[in-house]
Image (cartoon, rainbow, N blue to C red; front, side, top):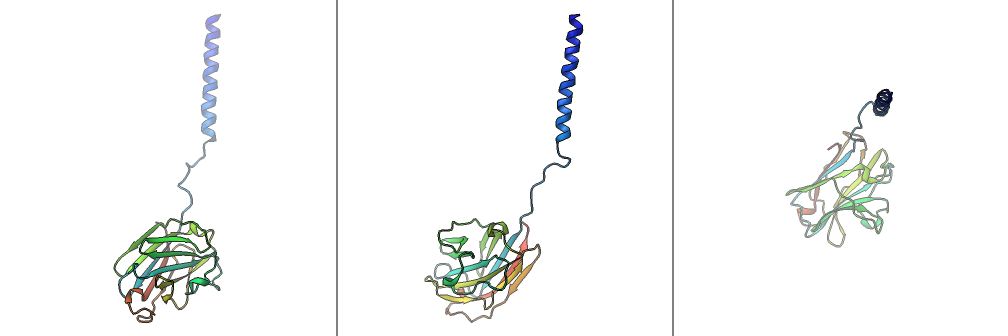
Length: 193
């Protein structure tokens, strides 16, 4: 009799373990978890007539991500609104942050400098829920933030994959005698990296 009880005990234990394993599998999702939502990036390239010279002046890209393309940023740094974001290139490198005083720096997805151009890549998620479009301007200044050159009209880019915006500025319209601060071309594109 003890052998029969022992056998029944083993069978019951085997059934319980089998049910436990099978119920665990039944609860697993049909598709394994994916990598998450796609993150769009804003890639902006700025070209100057001379060479990028962050020792004698500053380069700015200012962004308005509220989705209202009627009120984009202009060249006057002192009138940029607190909710704007900007990238500043100086002799220390790139800094990306909000205009609002006390805002902390935000990491750029990528950045590069060559002889006559620089490029930044910004994760759209870092723009705090951008609307359906982003307005931006490019400004060069002296080290005291007096404007040398800027886009006459800010650009607007839709926040959808593949959208582009570009402007080719007149050469020689900079307030600086140096070509290094004369913006001649700006291109932007929404990409996935």
